[in-house]
Length: 340
Image (cartoon, rainbow, N blue to C red; front, side, top):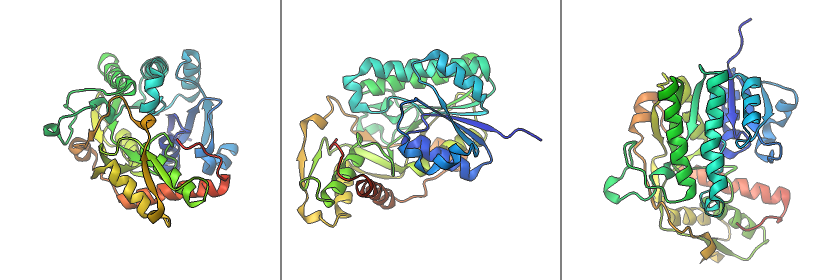
């Protein structure tokens, strides 16, 4: 009996990691290993807990990107055919407060993962998740942003992702490993962390509807331009990245097709609310970044031409599903949420 392919997802408890695990379980016959820290909340994996307990094609392995020996143990136990390296300190605003932790986790953590794979499983097909934040402050004349656009990172997080990006390509070129790098533009949907603008808005609206807070949504910079994709389209893209003629060292921009300002996102979410006419907007200085990557519109021609991937989920559904996610959480858990 032949061995089933095995995938390792680092950061499986995150929004993207949990959706990717669900997608691979539904669309492949692969065995799934999800790497997480022992203290990571498992809320995003709630729908998979029964399968994890029954060891039904998915298991959790404990590791931390800052622990070289722990990473090596995970890779030795998994011996994956496919690797989705998603784990990171992924919050740009937090990186201003914790720049060294962000750099260690994201840059050196990626080195630890790839070095373990180089030793244990050098023939694995590997996805290294960079970010559109590497492009930072892009002049209007360079829109839409293609893969050759110069880097101008606007946060310690973005700087760390420049390092992650370069490390991924280095391992492909120096050691002949099948490593591909993606720069995913804004992607959101159910389970999005509340430190990101659109999810913070949705959470606040859900709390307002429940009567838990005053009808005021606190915001940061509303003028940034973003192209929005759905997380469920994103994980489908990542699956295709590693299975449709993978090219070692390739770098791809991936993103949606609907572009708008953060202010427009806020208005969309408020428009879905039964209390829309009561809600006021208030700028919170603590939500403003010292520098902001304010023009994030991708050219995804290279990835689309190579794989045939295109987004399927419309912007309005993504936003409605995000708001419904927070409504459900408020109903289940009550109003015990910090307004972040």
